[in-house]
Length: 163
Image 1 (cartoon, helix red, strand yellow):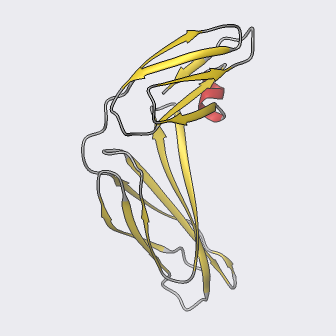
Image 2 (cartoon, rainbow, N blue to C red):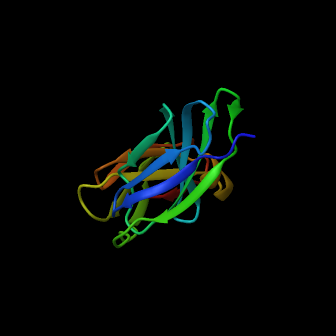
């Protein structure tokens, strides 16, 4: 039986998490697959996937958000097949940034100007869709470090926007 890998949180800060991966078995490990999940504004679950080569590993994941819960899951690739998943949860330190205040204004039938308030020197994600279900599952999206963006949409549709 292949055991799940052990995920140990080495350290965390406002914008990063460092963790180690190891197996408690003599089975040869060729690497790990790690998923980091977090929820964006209760509507959108985000995921970052890391494919790591080798048997032992310490990883640092950066560009995270302060005071945000993250779930890290991992499985090992071994000579006998893939291991079961293991999970760990961690909340980054610091104070979570205030949500930006968004305004969306139609420029014409196919363009919408989105603008918002918020801190400088950060990256904003703009998500938009024609339904809450689409906004949660498969929204259109764009990123920018500016405080406004023009997005192109389909004519004769109503859209929901989130920044």
